[in-house]
Image (cartoon, rainbow, N blue to C red; front, side, top):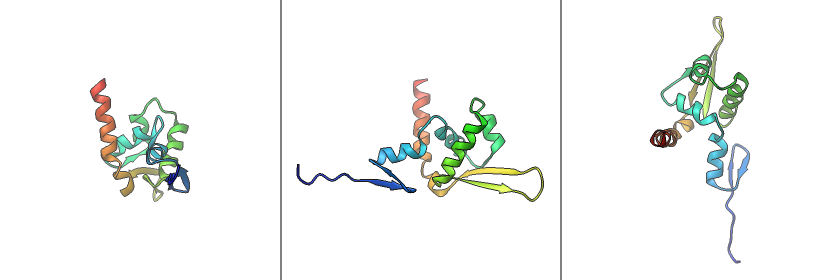
Length: 113
């Protein structure tokens, strides 16, 4: 077989076999898309996310937020001027490019429920 080339996709130091694999690597899993869905309309504090996602454990939410932050999809801002500590999460410019995809996923879920 002549001329077969396997295109590789590299994002954030990780290699993916195809573009769909890269996308799912960044937003896949049970909670990442849910987090992004809630952040589509604007910035939320950690406790606000917890209330919107009552079945997620604190540990899982924290881990998924860190992964999304590490992939430059969300931004974490900590306010330490006065107690109590305030932490907010918002979509980055790159994260905002996912809004049409997240909306489509949500619309599909609405159409089959």
